[in-house]
Image 1 (spheres, rainbow, N blue to C red):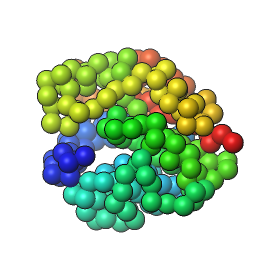
Image 2: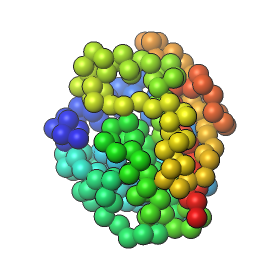
Image 3: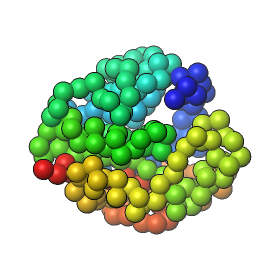
Length: 214
């Protein structure tokens, strides 16, 4: 996480580029379509600089990267320094947990999901924002990782089957999906896209909502 602490402003600035704005608008629409089905309050795990929490109305966020959290506070997001593997919240405190992009950067994704399950109330659920390994954008970022990209060199991109296995092992029900970013990652210019219901393998970004099991 040190890279996101030391280079928080550089990471955040990408979202202000034309390409970044289009991707963010598409991803936010995809996540909102599912997060809005869950009861409040909402927590974002891996809140980072607070862009998604601010746009989606997640009232609380947790992240270990202090540099990023300073930016999240400026976006009026209530934040706590902490790791997703050991969430500093009581059991059953939230109706929804958002994990946008973050799963590919944590050391123990299974433990992060078990902690999300713990802090969810009955009837709550987790919403994941994912770039899946088998998607065109997943293959694009895997190449970035191989080239030693500052932010993706340490990332792990999971397949749909791996994500579903992690969710099941953590006690969640089978997920439902929305998909977006059907444009090629190699296009110089991309445009915002709406969310498309369901899982589509050509979607570069998918959101998954999974309800807490008993």
